Length: 368
Image (cartoon, rainbow, N blue to C red):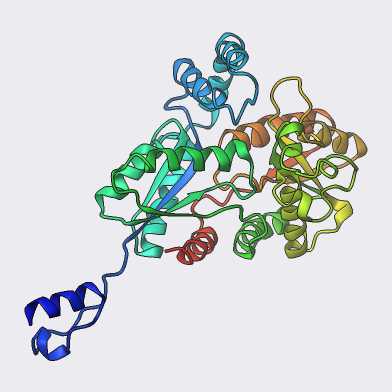
């Protein structure tokens, strides 16, 4: 009799409830504990040349960032870019550094803390380059007993050099665990209403108080070849002037096209006339062609055309950092004034403001 019952269990047959023992109901499986890893690009540990040089070597040594042959990339980064760029970048970081540290890191930690409350789940912050590392973030989540991970790269528009690199690094470290967790990922959210609504909520009071004559939507730049690589057809991206006018199959993974889609969504929400706003790209590096139009050239052109009051959104950055606070808030403002403009207003990034905590929290809740 015992052997027959054992065989029945092995075949998947259920035992009668009475034989399981009265007063001991079958329990439902425990809910899987999910953790979230927020990932941003990174920051040097201090606004000093050695720390900035170390950060640049790690960042620019990534083959997804500088996609050339490894020996040439090594020479370019270590013999040319890092030695000469590090002192200048260190001086720029020193202008925006706070008592708490790097703005990118500080804002990320604040967002992490508020999302923990919003989601009621473990949340950690990691940087693709620098500290806290992705490996450390994954280990921290593992210690909480998480069996499922949600990777959240904080880049609204997809690029292999940001989202792709961050996910590659996270998957590589996660796969080293003996028991690899179930992994989900938050991908590009460039047109998600919750992201657009949060940016618009921060921008409206700035526009209402500043009353600009023109608005720039300035995104981080990319080499043109990075965008062309996402077009499997080879017949669409950067082949004609209106290639980014709408999202189609050929450009659905194109960073530039997604940036223009973000601008369209924000224009609609902010009630901006297309002629009174421009999409541009900043932070280019090297001599190869980068996606246009360039922010530094466009703001000078606008000033010389007679625009006196210019507002700038930076919708590819969800946290204020060197590229927003120093490159736009200080250098671009000085260039605009030198060219004949009067005032430039930088719209704050989402940081850990309530609309973004709620918006990102809602996006992540669908995975958690």
